[in-house]
Amino acid sequence: MHTEGMMDLHSVTISPTHPGTVILANRLGLFISHDKGDHWEEMGIGKFSDLTYCRDVQVFPHNPETLLAAFSDSSRGGAGSLYRSDDFGKSWKRFDHDVSMDSTLMILGASPQTPDRVYCAARKGQVFGTEDGGKTWKEFGVPPFVKDLYALACV
Image (cartoon, rainbow, N blue to C red; front, top):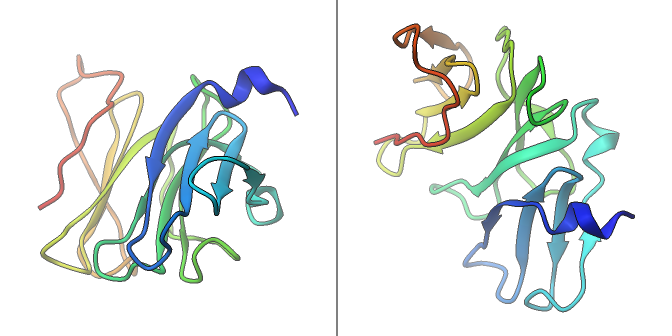
C-alpha cells in the first residue's frame, strides 16, 4: 500500500455504537480502525464498486449501523456514485439509482430530521437528492458558473 495515499485524508466518521472505531475516506478507498487509529485495515470497497476513490463517508443519522460513502474514479474524474452499507461496512450497495454523475462525487448529506432525505453533490456542479429513501432521485440545477462543490447542507 502507498503510505502517501493514506495522508490524503478526505473525511472521517465515527459511530456511537462502535466506541474506539474510526472510519476514514481517502483516495485509496475506505479504511477502518477499531483501536482509535493505532491500526488500520482497508474495508474492501473494491468487492462492491469499480469506483474506489472516496471523498466522503458518514454515519447515517437515523441508524448508527448504516454508512453512506461517495465514490469516484479519481479526484477530477468523470464518474461518481453514492453507496450505502446497512451492516457498518461489511457489504455495500449502490444507493443513487438511475443517476448519471459526470464528475467526482465530492460530498453527501443525510437529513438529521427526515430519514428519507439524502443529497449529494458532484465536482462539476451536479446536485442530486432523494426524498423517498433512495427509491427515486432528482437532479437539481445550479448556476453554470458553480464548479468544485465541496460542501452541502441537508436539513
